[in-house]
Structures are given as structure tokens and as C-alpha cells.
Length: 282
Length: 117
Image (tube, rainbow over all chains, first blue to last red):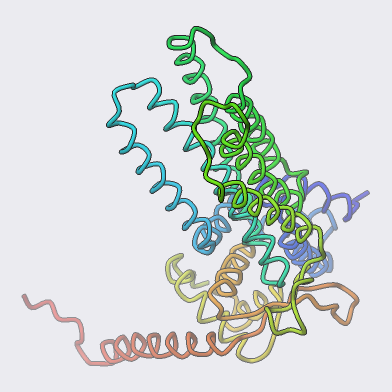
């Protein structure tokens, strides 16, 4: 016997991942299917009505392709972040190709791109936390955030991995050891591990938008400590940090902790009597 | 039955949706039914294709949406026209009237199709 709820569930499960993570859109399409099913059952069997409603709605792949076109156009922060990342990578490339130590230059370039990618994903997460807080956050932005975060995490994981390997090769050639667990190496390993976590979570359907925002913000903490923290450790070999340096790093880290707290608040919690932004959508 | 070309159906989607919403807020399924009714069944959309159009118009600020519980108790997403959407609709109207006027003038003229070089 035909079971509508079971059929709806199977249809939702059959959709491509990029649609399945958009619960509000799926609810809307489900209501459409139920309306169409209701109209068609008057003229035929429930099973036939359901099949016809599905055909008229279109395949999941086609729907996903059409929605991808809509999402591509809208999220300005992702485009800005990508442009900044490319500019930063270009500047570092120009700076280090002028050095005469190609292995070290390549290591620095790749690690810089990797760390910057995690920072860029973190910037998007900060934007998402604030937008969600004032209620100006919707499903399309959510989908764009997930797609951009996934791409950035992939770049971060690949370039950081290659950079860490090249760094180890350089250390073996010039310092006589592959790996010594010094603060920079520990930092590199941490960023690599975090990039892997980000990649897995941004690609997983099980991750909620809020958890992705939290991971993105926490990535800022991991990279800031890994990249700039070693300069604060006593007896390191990377030069002396100016007095202000510790304060700036500390201030940045505390700001990220505040953002972690803000990410835990309900959507729209930052809106003050309706003046700060539009009404929250959940 | 006269079947409209794919390109024409796609080009008319935005003005049709905006015109329907100009008459009052509505939801996806009702918009599709209204299009069928208005075109006498000649205009066949793949139903799912309406939603990207609605979402794009919303992203562009032409329409707005909200979830509402309908009379039958079912939760539906309703769309409504915004001020920006009215302007877009006016632009579409002017363009389609121009095309309509040009074609009507051409086709109503006797011996309108010239083969002279």
C-alpha cells in the first residue's frame, strides 16, 4: 500500500547533497509535492499521482544545478575573501621567488597559502556569526558559506601538507633532522590537522551551519597561535617580537572567543529592538 | 495544442511571476497553477524550475518571503512583491509591450513580409 510520508522521506534522501543540506528549501519543495499529489490523487491511484508529481517537479540533479546558479551570484563575502587570498598569495610568491633558496621559498609560499585559507574560512565564519546574530542570514548564504568553506579547507589541507613536507625536507638538508617538534613545526601540524577537520566537517551533511561557524572561528585561533605564537615563546630562533605584538595577538584571540560565544546565541539575538537588522529567519 | 518554445517560456517566467505576485502574495504551487490557468494550459513549466526563479528574485530584493500556516493547516512559504519588484515589473511590462507592438504592427500590415533585397 502506498505510504505518502515514506515516499516523501525516500525522495528527500535521494536528492543530491547540495540540496539535502538545505532543509528550508526541501520543506518548500515537499509542500509543493504534497499539493500536487493531492490534486492528482483525485484522478488516479496514489502511486501514479506521486510518480507524476515527481516527474513534474524535475530531477534532483536538475534542481541542484539551477539552485547552484542562484547561489553563485549572491555571496559577496566569499568573492571578497577569495580575492584577498589570491592577492596575499601573489604578494608572497613575488617576495619569495626573489630569494635564492627555492626549497625554503616554496615551503613558505605553500604554508602561507594554507594558513591564509584557514583564516579566510574564519573570516567568512565571523561574517556568518554576525549576520546570523542580527538576523540577516538565510539558507542561500548558508549554502554559499558551506561551499566556500569546503573549497578553502581543501586548499588549506593540500598546501599546508605540501608546505610541511617541503619544510621537513629543507630541515633535513640544512639542519640535519626532519622534524624536531619545535613551536613552528607543532603549529604546522596543528593547522594541517585543523584543515582536515574543516574539510571533513564542511563536506559532511551531518554538520549544522552553527557548528561550521564555530569551527571556522576556532580555526582563526588555531592559525593565529600556530603562525604568530612561536614568536612569543622564549628562546625561539625566529627573532624578537615587539612589545605590542603579544597584546595584538591576545586581543585577536579574545575577540575570537567572544565570537565563539556569539555563535552559540540564538539567531537574531544581536538585533536591538529591530533597529540593527532584519527579522531573524531561524 | 500550441507548444511554446523553451526560450520564450524561460524569458516570460520573471514577468509572469511578478505579475501574479502583484495581485497578492502567493506560494509556489499556486503560482504554477495560475500560470497554467492564464495560458490556457499552453505554458508548461517543469514545476521545480519556478523555485530557483523565486529564490533569485528574492536574492535580488524584488520579492520577499515568509512561512505561514495555510487554512488547511499546512505550512507554506508565501512570496510577496516588494517596491523594487514593482519597478522590475514595470520595466518588463514596457519591454514586452514594445515587442508586442512591433510584432503586431509587422503582422497586421498587408504584404508585410518583403522578399526584396
